Image (cartoon, rainbow, N blue to C red; front, side, top):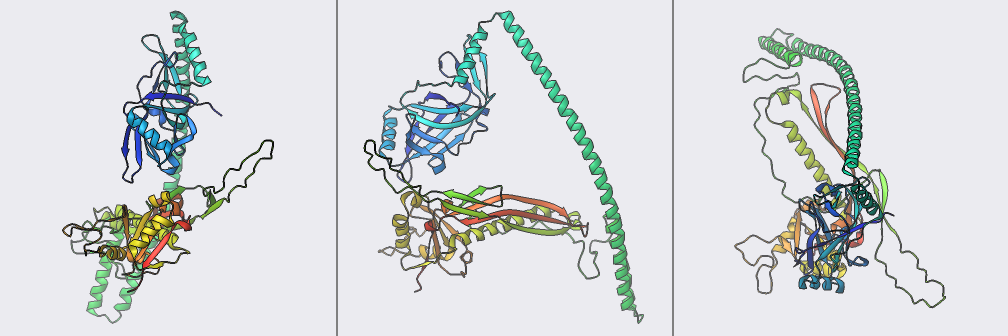
Length: 560
């Protein structure tokens, strides 16, 4: 295991504040970029802004006094968030209502705690040494491999340095004892070596680039030649087939020599010539009112097309409310543990250890499925209109994807559940949040309700006949309830529901529903059967899974 370095900042800007839910928050910077440290036992240190570019903060902990038994917050529980900005690594922690957390909060408030340490491992080759103008060894950290902890500490001068950094410090000090001539010679040799390596790298890269470009050019020319031959052959076949069809239609209609039929045949010949020009030259000469029509009456090239108007989607999307996990395999399992319920047992001297059985490992299985859709459009549609049809169709594909996610998420929320009929919606929602769910699950819960359910809630009045949600009737109804923002969906999104049905889901969606994704492909393709048409398509691989059935409550309203 790699030994971490530990650095401590004396933070005068450590802040505390109360959160909206009654809990307390602390925030500040755990490290700052491009600021010189104090003397760290014979050297000064800088951390560059690029040093955190490869660091993962998913399992980061905020602890007290470097003791892992004193956990204040953690990233994987969403009680600790960090952000890398132009100043440094900023953190914000929501403290639980514990004795330790309250003591730390009050000590910061009183000014007793001002230090914040961070434990980290430097990446191989992720640091460099030089000297300050006063001859002090200067340690520059350019790449950090990992950060294991953030610590609130009462000892701002505390510094621990790994053996690797200590050895590097010894070497730089040894080098500083060299004469100016020896230093100059060493630096010259170092520059020559680096320059030689740089030239060799550039030469290798240039050779690989030229080889790749040559191969790409040859492949492109071969492909273009094949495609040109295919297009020429298909063009001739299409022209021949269409002309024959028009001649046959004219012959069938003109058997009696009727003048009107002969005029029809003449117009068909004109259309055929226009069609030939479209296929062969990509353009057609006609007046402003004419259109090129195929034999079945469909229009090949439209007249002027104005920019489209769009209806705004009226309801919030559910995809951003559930947990999204990227996976690389079609099937798999996500294990999770419930809280341990046992206790430690008294251990007498020389007695056998009190062995405990591991709690049951729960498993969430996924099996990816494929979903796709395509839109077809002609080259003539693109050529005859300045409107960006490809972008329009692409936006519609995204809408189809979001509609699919909404449907799959609602299915996951309701599968295997029966809606509980309620005569008092407010009372039953409160019971779910106050009793059925544990405090953290209740705090993180969402309330998803149909539009008719919101209307039902909005119509409720208190004992004095005043609207429950909005006392002031001159203002719009408040889309929040019991301190939670309401997620309003279409009535018919719920399974087997019809317009007017009242349905409400109460659940911490990030825990109860997980969307496993392998990727999404959106592309533009040429139809192999007709080169004058293209397809714009989307293809996704995902599975939306009901992860915690015990954390989903579904209620509906009792019929009057």
